[in-house]
Picture 1 (tube, rainbow, N blue to C red):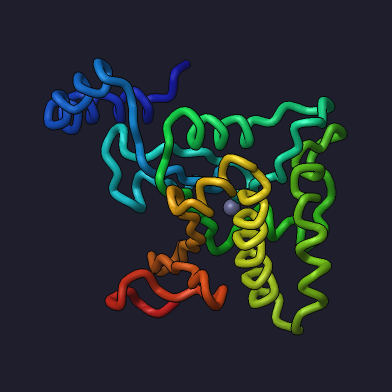
Picture 2: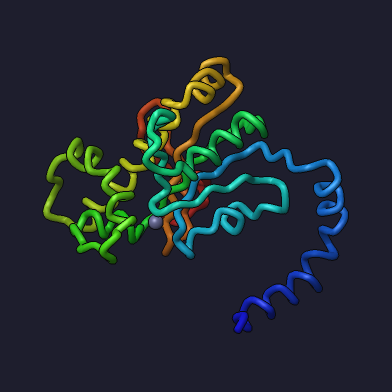
Amino acid sequence: MFPKRLSEGYQSFLEGRFPSERSRYEKLAESGQSPEILIIGCCDSRVSPEVIFDAGPGEMFVVRNVANLVPPCDPDSESSYHGTSAAIEFAVNALNVKHIVVLGHASCGGIRAFYDDAKPLTKIDFIGKWMSQIAPVAERLGPGTGDRNANIKRLELAVIEHSLQNLMTFPAIRRRVEKGELELHGTYFGVATGVLFLRDPKTGEFHPCLETGAPA
Ligand SMILES: [Zn+2]
């Protein structure tokens, strides 16, 4: 049975938001989408980019995977499908986005599971293989302090950095960044506080996006 929550939510959309944005939907259907922003976020149900950035239809091209990871550009590997890379390639080459935002977040279950060395969820364990991408990141960071939460946050921020670095392994992205046609941004959402942090490209440090934001 189709979840009641969804049919009710759809009805609310149809009666509320859709009429107010109808002309925008019609225009987008006719002319196609041309979002200027690609967001790479986590699947986490608390970190919906369209909600956090109050986005309307057609404004953001969103790719979500566990732990907002960008794998390195690896066109020669035929052993797996590259869903994230395909979406990134489409956003850059076909949609000509002007910004790519990696949106990490606090309390990331995928990163916490990696940190705690959680047992595989299934025999196939796709998630374990996916998260193993961050093993070199954790190794580079070293053992950290005795504060588990601080260590996990440090890893969450380093994963954002890692994804930004891997974005630059895509030749089309590197070329556009170097020509000033594309900007990359690192962001981190504090789920409990609602504070959005931006990565300073000069220092690599994260600071609140708005001065009015509550402390993390
Ligand atoms: Zn997450």
